[in-house]
Image (cartoon, rainbow, N blue to C red; front, side, top):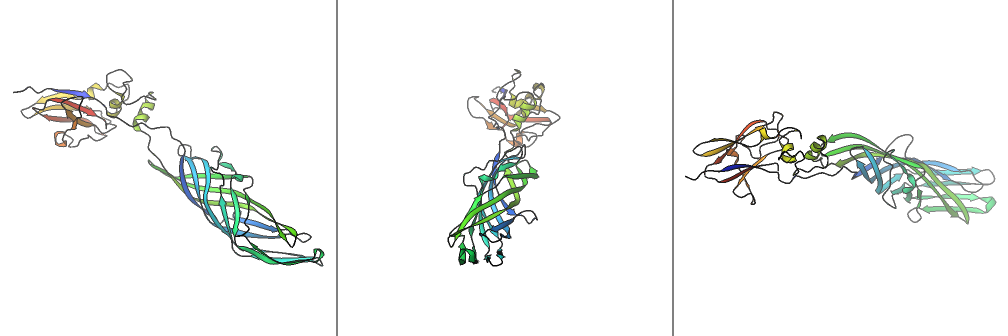
Length: 358
């Protein structure tokens, strides 16, 4: 009869490592809110020698934005408007001065676009504030028409402004802000409520019957919605190494020089300073059919699944042991397993038994 030789060969297959967490890009749809102090843009029509006419247009609609969010600090470093179409309610602008003249103008529903013409839109992560001039607001559709009469200047004209042909726009004014409020947190994602405030200023001059007429628009847009970022969980070995004062160590290294790799030490659920040898493969009983090996796993359970493989040549691929030959009935042995585990190898199978953390 051939003598069966079984040796425990401890090794660790490749484990992935994780990089430092950085800001994660995500898109979000933000909708104009219905709040008293926001999304009410005041329009002013300032013809010469007549009083200024004012009315307020109410903004509705949604925009799509790109945000860069750091899931650790919950800070945002970029706000870029990708697509922004909003609507403004119709306005009426009128004014008169006795013996001098009058005007009476009405608009249709107005269409406007929000844009970031030179992305990315930079946000100060520490404060959530940004320079609003990075973004533009343009009235791009709708009409404004009516009559203006100024006898002193010899003007009596029917006006018809078509914003589709002559858009009126300008950059944001002053400082805007992005506010993030975390709402849902899972191991693989994080969701935020997002509020964006963008001051708006438009100042443009039209010509009517040879006379320049300024039109101004000013107010603050506020848009809200939710943004979700997908998170790649940090590598558990890296977390273990950092907690054990082994930052930068790899699974294949043997940082304490005890002959057992860092990866096996971690996979067994041990601290770096604990003795791993009582928890490694030990020879057991031999019967007519099998040769046994035992594992005494720590009471706290293993940190990683442990795969049991066999092979006749350490330089060639090893193959998993059948689950029926392991007392847990599963191979890999599941993470969290503790206590005694028996592995039986058929007699006559010459070679090695290997424990790895896949």
